[in-house]
View 1: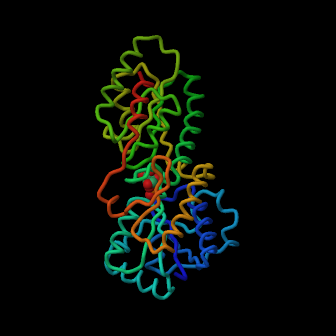
View 2: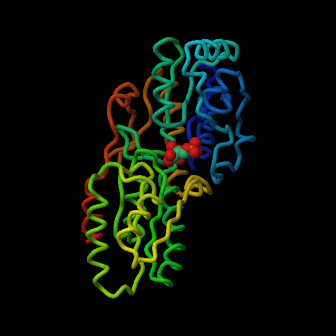
View 3: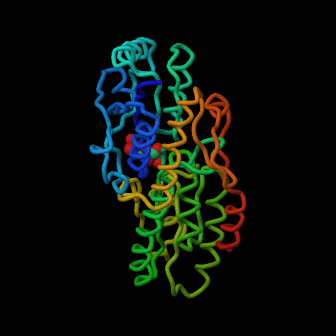
Length: 324
Ligand code: F6P
């Protein structure tokens, strides 16, 4: 193996840059050239590539986003797009690829490997933490901390007015950010995609609270992918039944995805970067790096594509108790 390519794909995640820096250093150690591919799979299809080295990646571990930029490529999903990507790989003489991204990125890689003999190792990079076979994905810790810090601020003003706040957080179809932010922020309720009947439980709670003198704020975290709909939708149902609560909504949005990565995202990013290069050098392909039960390990992409991620049942149970 003489030269490999690396790209970031899907939604950016804090820690991607720390991971890129580690990949560059691991390549140097293995005497491999490292080529950065820009804008995810689009860069493969369009040939947007440029060498990465220790100099042009210096100090990036502390930066959010991704220096390689990212995209969700429609063209790579077509056979024609993948054929163009293969031509570019041949032209740039890339012997292997490292794909940093989420579920969609790895599905693309599995499809790629069916048709083309270029090995791929993945690194989970998504704030949603929604991959099978790993308890962690890069960016999750920073995103939850961003959410928690924003919610702490919201709760200062909520307390001052004894208001009910519904705060919507990201996560696509996964409730990991919502559950962790809810526990960390002392929320009374959380709406998760993985749980049914939360609105009924919430109304029950509000019913009880409405009989008490309202002397403090209330907080509910709403995962964007939950079954009851957006925080605005939940708020309009709450207002209709409980006009006595002064109800407000905040949708946190992309603020959760930005900013300097936490220690955890930098360290796991670095560790996975080294692991990915070493796996390629050993001739492995079709795996992504993972972290489960305190251990770093490789996870089969094909198996992962057929299986769902797991929620932390213990944390869900703790939340049930905290919300009583
Ligand atoms: O997958 C990461 C994520 O931030 C999700 O939590 C969210 O649903 C989605 O991306 C937002 O996508 P975009 O940045 O394209 O609006």
